[in-house]
Every structure is written in structure tokens, then in C-alpha cells.
Amino acid sequence: MPAFTTKHIRLPELPHFVYAKDSRRAAGLSVGVDLTPDGACTFHCVYCKVDRSNDARAPRPGAQNVAEAVAGLLVHLAVQGSRPVDIAFAGSGEPLSATAFADALRAVLDVRDRGPFPTIPVRILTSGVGLQRPDLRALLVETESRGVDVWLKLDAGSASDFARVNAPNLAFQDWLEGVRALGRARRVTLQAMLFETPGRARVDIDAWLARVAALCDEGVRVEQVQIVTLSDPSHAETDARAIATAELEAIAARLRSLTGLRVDVYV
Ligand code: SF4
Image 1 (tube, rainbow, N blue to C red):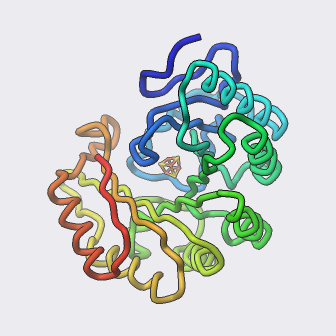
Image 2 (cartoon, protein in one colour; image 1 turned 30 degrees about the vertical axis):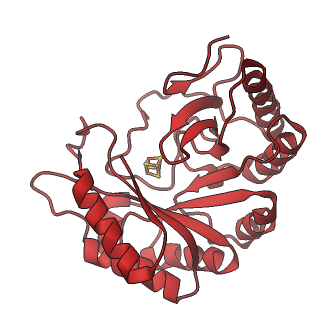
Image 3 (cartoon, rainbow, N blue to C red; image 1 turned 90 degrees about the vertical axis):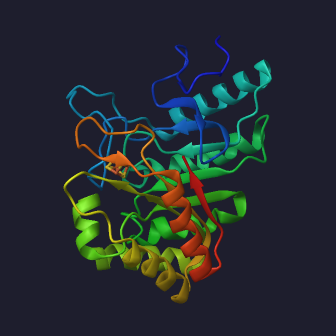
């Protein structure tokens, strides 16, 4: 079995929906769970790199299959002396959109508790579409005490930027209501992908800063704000480009000054 020294690794003896990768934001090796290997997502972000060109994408896994695969990978890591920093529901699309999500989350928590790394967090990386459902919000609130973190995408501060950048399948106000409802009931981390595209207006940074501040004022319990940019200098299909680190740091400083939140830049 290979050692986990490269960026994104799947073991041939494990199924396609579980992998290990180096994560900038998690600051270490992350065990990934992909509940939507078909690439289905509730956003259509202009910078998205998920390849949806193949109609014959792999089928979605069931909860038990996910739990068994994660258990196998955790044991493998322990045997080779590697320690993951988290288990992340991320992958090719939106985890909350998978019908197996609730059962898979509970099963993975049980596997983690019984396995070699019982204290690592389980993170849900989500667009926030799905938080309009009370049952999903209740699940995420209930599991906070079991070490479940929610990392919510917040790329835009206005309805027009939201439509332009994320091209979601629901209205900005409806999306905001779900975010507020969850964030008032449990801690959340906000993630912003900031980028630029030659010849087109950037996301309105002032509006984005104001939106984060407004969410805090409205009672959303923001634990951290993560600012990232594209990992490649430019995106081949959309021409989207990374923003310079110094500028991202300046934006982070403005947000810290405005809100007092922990704000980190990952490049
Ligand atoms: S939320 Fe993530 S997977 Fe979905 S379209 Fe945006 S970048 Fe792609």
C-alpha cells in the first residue's frame, strides 16, 4: 500500500468514494467522503473544477458502504503511522443533497468513535443548500457535540453576486434563511472563494464583508472565516484567476477589524 505523501490518493483496494488528501484548510491529511461521485451539486460555481463531462460517473454509495470504507482507510493509516486531521464529507458535489447523508454521517461517527482516531472532527463542506430542511438542520445541531463541524460556502454578499458566482438553484433570501437558522443553533465556519476574471467585475468585497458582519449581528455563531483563492494561477475553462495573497490578507484584516472574528487566508 502506498504512503500518503501526495496530494490526493485513492487506494485501489478501497472504493472510489473514499480517499485521503492533503488539505490546506484542515492543515494536514484529510480522509474524504464523496457521497455524490456523480458530481451533482446544488451550486454551479463559475470556478468549479469538478469534471461532469462523463455521463457514466460512478454510482452514489450507501451509508454502510461508506462506513466500511472509512473504517478500512483509518486502520490503514494507523498501520502505516499516519494520522489524519479530520474526516470530511466533501468530494465532487453537495453532500447534503445525497439521500444517504444522514445515515452516512451517523455511521461514520460510529466508525470514528470505535477506530484508531476517535478524537478527530468530522467536517461537512456544504453550499448551504439543504439547510432549509429542518431535519438536516436538526441532525447537524444534534451531532455538534460529537465533533461535527460545518464549513459553509459564502462567496458572495449580495443576491446579484450570488447568482453570478454560485448560480444556485434557489433564491438568495431562501438560502440565507437556512444559513441563519443553522448558525443560530450551532457553530459554523464560513468559507469564501475569492478570485478575479479578466474583463469582468469581481465579487463586491464591501458587500461580502457587510454580509458576514450582518450574519454575526443576526446571531449566527461564526467560529472562523476561511478565505481561499484558486490553487492554480488560472482556471482553464472560465479564465478565473487567483487573487494575490497580499490582497487576500488585506481583506482578512478588514473583516477582523469589522467583526473581531478569527479570519484565516489559505493559499
Ligand atoms: S459548491 Fe463546490 S462542487 Fe458545487 S459547483 Fe460550487 S465548487 Fe463545484
